[in-house]
Structures are given as structure tokens and as C-alpha cells.
Image (cartoon, rainbow, N blue to C red; front, side):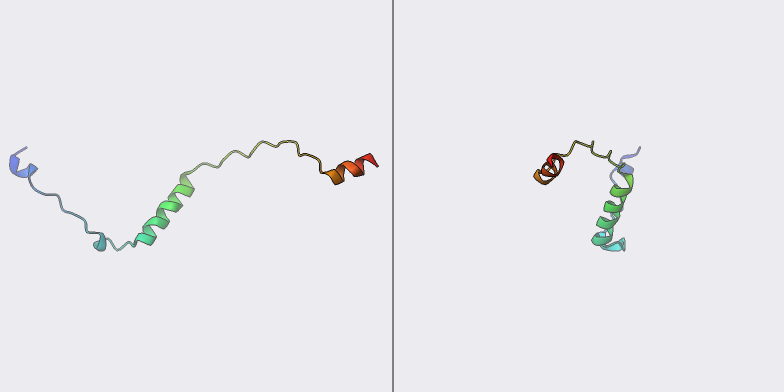
Length: 60
């Protein structure tokens, strides 16, 4: 590759020329994260501790 080609600057994209607001950009990132994250496994069920009222009813 000739030296003149390597030294040429690549065109820069200025933030104002894209037409996308920061709010829209952040919203699209949040939506992509929600869509691409797999659902979590449900929490394993643990036996519930009985309340004092339940124990009194069962004892009666």
C-alpha cells in the first residue's frame, strides 16, 4: 500500500449529522438488551414458614 493512501484521514462522522438523538440511542440500546437477554429461571420454591395464626388454627 502506498504511503499516501495510509496517511489519508478517514471521513469522520459528526454526532449532529446522524439525526439520532442521545435519548433515542439509549432507548434502542435498552430495548436491544431486553430482547437479547434470555429469561431467567424461576426461583426454586422454598417451604414457607407457618405464621403464628396458622399454627393456632391447626392446633385447635
